[in-house]
Image 1: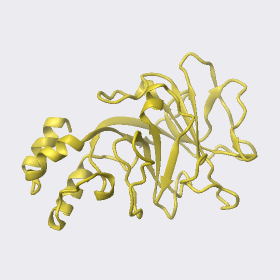
Image 2: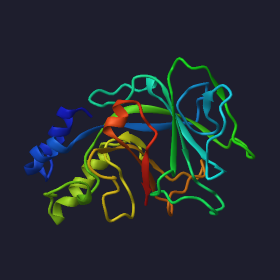
Image 3: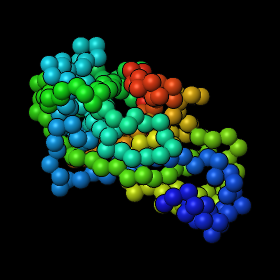
Length: 245
């Protein structure tokens, strides 16, 4: 769906009187589709498994404990206008997630998400996690999407009445082909507040719990990762924040 299609959908809906408001708050996004039929290759975008890092890299840790590899995003595989994503490079993401539930950080704590950005010119090799197998690997692909706020907590002056909320939710759901996506607005299941850290921050990645990948955020909800806009422009992924619920 492009911007014109989006506005036409609004015009034909029961919330047409809010067209101008929605035109102002719509954001670019990139849906993430899982492809179990493709074998992973070195440097490709994927969830799970083992990361491709610069040769000789050591596994990242927090407080002496190894991070768990979440996935990697090859920005050269993404084509999206109107956003400040890098055009090249590989972003590897890790979480301080302990399947045993002992000694792990909460998703809203600093350091829960760890990122390594690797320029395209650096030689890579697959680095296996310490003291465990690689687990399941799923290749991911990206398709352009659009997004509007998930709920009234994410914007000021929410204009929709009670009878309009269901129409709004149906339209927002139609904008996504996946519950996993880059950019846009964060979506959640149980939080009654805006999970964004504040002004100057944007949503980088939203991903749902997944049994195949042994992901369980909060109680089977979503993990939301945020970055400051200036850091993103400068390819600085060293201070990400997150929340889950």
